[in-house]
Length: 412
Ligand code: UDP
Image (cartoon, rainbow, N blue to C red):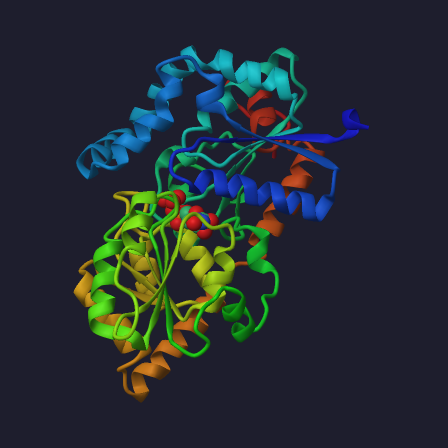
């Protein structure tokens, strides 16, 4: 019966593509692992459950993030706890009605956030409801979908659990006042299709219409097809010519797709495969030898699982900055923004490099594979299932609701 199913509310917001992708990965893994035992609702809390101007936040983000200065300013100004905690409490006065509506509508047994602005306010609303007896004790979990450097609003000490992908994020959570016992580190939640075995590479290339034996490089710019992708194709064409094939995934960038399709093809030119938004990126990654991408957390985590050396060609300011040293320090790739130099690196990886360089290239791929966390999404889902089944009175809204005069009652 539907009434017997445990309900899980995943709060996300469409700022960039990554939060939605993570929410969907969690939903898919729940389905695979538990069938219909849990009912998962993915809700854009900001857009669907807050009044203007707060419901414009996703659009404001799309605007701000395209302007490095404005985004850095917004990010840095709100990063200190002394600023964002009072700021969010003020915002709460305006938006908590919407959060209450969502809680009434979905009556969740667990609330999960995959967004940096969805901790403090929902937890406060839930705590008030538990304290007043209008909600039974319910856990709140954060699944951080940034990889390294990330905004401090991800970390609220009153969350029950916080799932962090890397040691860097774990330390950041601790410096924001979270206890080690609240933190779990499995990795980023990546779609289950990345953890299933793929056909052997020749069969995969055949099914994707790729040349069987030419070295192949994958070029991606996140869900929106961001970055100097066209110039990079131009330089790869100049430098590698028909000795290489290039797959460009343009995401939702239609104009880029059209321009690339109009490029000259044939002898002397790189063999070009131009795609729009694809849902089989795991197959393209499995079929290619290396990837060129902006420093998006989702794409990096997926490339690691696929064992691909990663050439980073740029990043969104602030939250993607730390992903560059992560790739370099773990020796799984390189960072270069100039398209001509990008082409030179790809050429040294795939074509012109000597024996030593080839060995290093192969070693990068092996290290990438070893760092990848294909099982993380299942481990996260198992832990979330447990949190939906049992309230935790040590951490989270239930524990906060039991706070009497600043002391945790009943907690050790
Ligand atoms: N993606 C996809 N199909 C496409 C382009 C991108 O499935 O055609 C996925 C990609 O696999 C990744 C996500 O979109 O999971 C992009 O996330 P990332 O964190 O790299 O960058 P964002 O777009 O969120 O800035």
